[in-house]
Amino acid sequence: MIVNMSEGATEEQIQHVADRIREAGYQAHITRGAQRAIVAAVGSGRRNEIEALQAAPGVEDVVPIAQPFKLVSRQVHPSRTIVNVAGVHIGGPEIVVIAGPCSVESEEQILSTARAVKKAGARMLRGGAYKPRTSPYDFQGLGTEALRLLDRTRKETGLPVVTEVMSTEDVDIICEHADMLQIGARNMQNFALLRALATIRKPIMLKRGPSATVKEWLLAAEYLLAGGNSQVVLCERGIRTFETETRNTLDLAAVALAKELSHLPVIADPSHGTGRPSLIPPMARAAVALGADGLMIEVHPCPERALSDGPQSLTFEGFERMMSGLQEPLHRVALAAATAS
Ligand code: PEP
Ligand code: MN
Image (cartoon, rainbow, N blue to C red; front, side, top):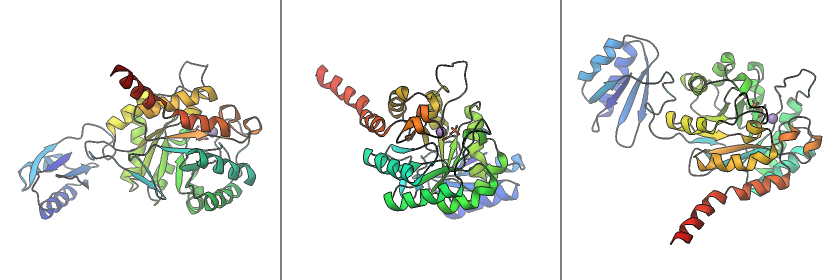
């Protein structure tokens, strides 16, 4: 349930409502907007006691929360969340491009990639240290050695780093080295991992599972917010469909829908979403045009030698071209307007 406070409600009245919500067995979450505050009753408790708050001083109305993902929903938090990753703001006016190799493979590989993507306009570096691979015989990542290389690369380039965490055991060590932790698609519903990451003080990138509905994705994010971590960025990375020409089907409608339903920033990953370098620039442009807050792109100095996801990796030149192409839809609209006048 949501208790909408009236415009002139005092701090005392807001706190009184929050206390009454807790007495009724719920958690109370206060969101302060420019005009008014909202106090959400989340969890399970005595609903009739919340409905009765209609009569409390400073209360405008009491309404049910329409969605099962309560704290993630825009009803509870109408203004957009901006996630701060070591000074890079995701969810604000800037489109944040995160780029780098699928896996960290060597010092030379990660450093040269970081320098190249930074020069082309990327604001964050990605690189896997612990890799979820379909086959146990494939490269599994360099682990702690990769974390050390990511550290060194951040020091040299200043780019904040995001890397995947696959197990609760690795949370502490990854927190020591990364600026943001990625929950990979295969782990979107690893509830033990979600609970562990809800308690840390680092931002999280939550990828959508390959067969997860938008509702399931947002409920996975709800675990993080309900456990105390509200610094969450959602990442659409493609879902499994009947189509076999692309690695996954990048569901851009889900990007727009997640932004409509939730206040969290949403980015798109056209690398895993298509698996084809030729489709990455057009899908990146489409994602930006429809309101994505950022992009995650795999880049490798020599894709044919990559130890993972080489076939979908952009070269440095390919990435640079993709970055300049991001302006294209806007130019074309401006051009059409100029021609019309
Ligand atoms: C990755 O980012 O390299 C990765 C493994 O992503 P996903 O979890 O989306 O497959
Ligand atoms: Mn990859």
